[in-house]
Image (cartoon, rainbow, N blue to C red):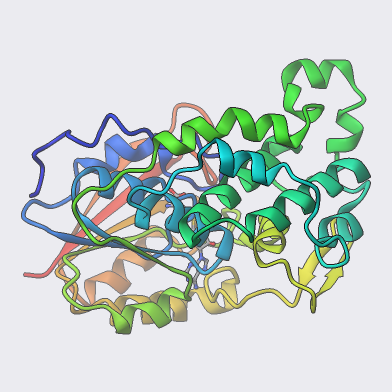
Length: 351
Ligand SMILES: C[S@@+](CC[C@H](N)C(=O)[O-])C[C@H]1O[C@@H](n2cnc3c(N)ncnc32)[C@H](O)[C@@H]1O
């Protein structure tokens, strides 16, 4: 293993707020990473918390998520080696909207739904200025910070819940979460140094993709470890319902329909893992396409669909495996974590 061990551990991953994030389980999962590996792929990277751990461990990291806002975090904190946002960049983000006739999507879609009109206008202006930053890594870093600030401003940290503006009128709620009433630019100013400090080079050419994992896998060569943490049905599998606004802010779509009370974009991207009717076939394809990778580390939660026995049968067709479990003592472990249920790691290596 390339563990000259903890030389990159002074860099800290900014605290994520993402359903199913493995941030709190990183050190438990770390013990199952095989020795003597060089290249790791995180095919369903979400918040990028595990991809960041792999980067800290000195591996070449190929990270991927089918949602663009997660890919932007991958560009910002995994592929990016040294592009941070300086004072001039920050000041440029706070300039007036560079083109209000184009950068008005957040105002026209979400005013008085998640944010007040004036905050929507600020978000549109910052978003427009992000597009004018010098390179794709700076743009990705600024977008990651803006999106993270938006999750701080809403209750529960996601956009399936629509009470943020009501809660912002309630002193008790504000006491619990002051971000409800803080301007987005103020939250960004707090987060910016943390994100800047998380940018580092680990001596590898890391990269971030924005593909369906089933499209990515056939393109990969020489990967030693595949980390698989797909959505499982029963456990908040439909990420687009929870984080639609972040995807809209990243893509800045002009040709989408926005539906329902929370103005989710339509149609959704195709996942293959978020509906019971498709999940088994997608998992079977996933394992078949991963056959050439010597080591698999699979995250699972035992409240999920399919059940653990079905999942293990699918894996046993391809290779031997062992199962490790960690019991949740509270509900802070992420997706579907409830006291008494288990986070599961399946370690499957070729004979
Ligand atoms: C359980 S989360 C991963 C959490 C991640 N390990 C972390 O620590 O934040 C599953 C992720 O899979 C992504 N996803 C869903 N379907 C996908 C697909 N077909 N290809 C790639 N990513 C997909 C979702 O956007 C979501 O971010």
